[in-house]
Image 1 (tube, rainbow, N blue to C red):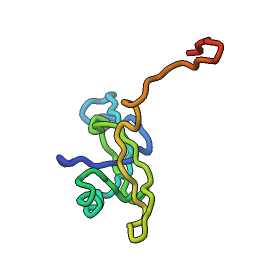
Image 2: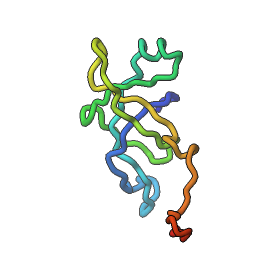
Image 3: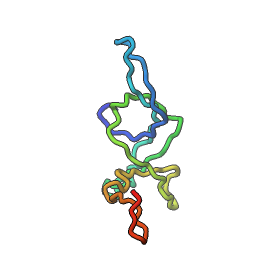
Image 4: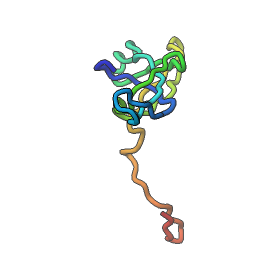
Length: 113
C-alpha cells in the first residue's frame, strides 16, 4: 500500500462492480491491518522478528485482491515481562519447503496415498 508492505488478516473476499465497465466484476478483499513491527524487537533481532500489534476491527480496509503479494502466517508472540501486549509475529512458508508429502505406509508395506 502506497509503496510499502503491510501485513493484514483477510476477513473475506467478494466481487465488486466496476464503475467504468458495467457488468465487470473486480475481486476485492476486506482486510484488518496489523500495526507496524515493534521497532525495538526488530532492531534487537537484526531485522528478523516482525512482531506486530493486531488491531482487529479497528483497522479494516477494502483492497483489490491483486494487491496481495503473498500468504503468510501470523502467530501469537509469547509474552515476556515488559513486552507489549497483543503482538503477533510473521512466519513465512511455515514448513512448506521443509516437508515432503508421502502417503501412509502401514507395517505390512501397504501404501495408502
